[in-house]
Length: 272
Image (cartoon, rainbow, N blue to C red; front, side, top):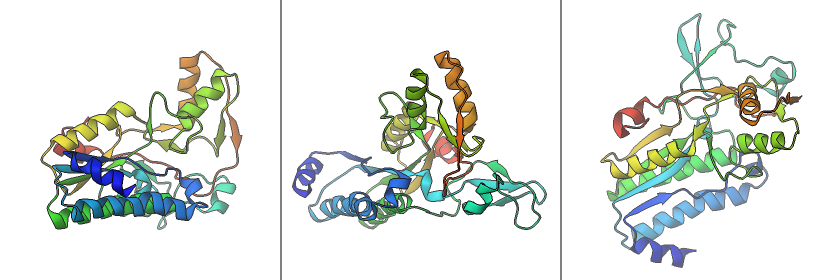
């Protein structure tokens, strides 16, 4: 709504751009919608700011860890960092879950993913989040508007929709297990994620808005990782249940391991 956005922006000091169509899988068959809601709408907001003479102190834009594709890994044999692409469907069907070094075949060890990792956006959603980030930083750089992009890692917390498309595995599992139903895990359950509580994301946004930092991208995570199997164990403990998961076929395109390197945010934003 260009007219409404123009009026709202005239009264704003800081623009905190969190809006997106979310969901990796859904984006692959609602391609036009995701590009329109994420990429085009961001361009429209920036167009208003530039051409209506909007004076902002800062813009914060929500980006995503999905723009990295797979996480970062280390080959213990070569002691070198590797950045593998997504696993092929044949590999997962054969139960070969982990990435291996292309040079020596040694199983790779997951390590924290830094902001400097080469990006491999493997879905329409990831591409559109990269668009939101790059459009904002590029336009703001050209017009001298302070801006920061925050790359979220699997945010969760109270009131999260268990049927939503955004990182909903935790509320979905809670809902099932509270009803006595076994949660479904795709693959072997040893895939891991950096589950990040909502208060951490809020804190990162406040610190980014109040800081003098501009033109930078930051990971927003906990800097650790839990497997999906460990998640089920924790939920059983918290809910007082004893429900074993159901294991189903792996999903093509699933990232194996994902963990944020938060050292840059810690240094420049005093984020923890």
